[in-house]
Length: 246
Image (cartoon, rainbow, N blue to C red; front, side):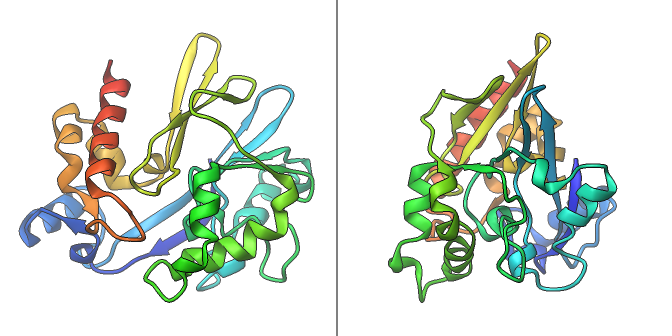
């Protein structure tokens, strides 16, 4: 796991729907987190299949808001990984903080030899002109900056398809229309990879099955152009938890 840096998104009450202010404060403090600001760790999973070097997510180097962000390339190098050696970039979806690091701030490619694996539904949704002038514009502009210049490198996949040897796509819509999770299989063991795996509070809920299945109350925002279907997202989250604990 390699960090791109922290992403601050403000007051928890603007992010989580359902819990009271007191419940939110306790939930944050119990995790040793500030109670007045949600700070997400932008973590990128790196795997080596033996044949391919792959990244899940990319951070925000092309659209970073401060110098604490957009540190993935530097941190990869410090870990002994050259960006030019990356074969596959696999964002779970096309929100700004997941595809914003495919390109650098100067418009160059961070991973010049990599193919980009993403769902066709998300590419089409986030590059559609209808997103402009809406609350989704930030991610739409990031998609134009990071995905469109790499259109010839993009590979689509279908639900259940193996995108790389040992890496299977699992369609988990709701957070975005084409949101996808991945199951990495190796040596008889499986690793479930999803956007939620990088969020401290989501990790906390999924460590407790009863809390996990109630986590539809801990959901960012109502149905909107950013998260198109709250109901679908909640159903998907519960099904993922059932899979994790089966």
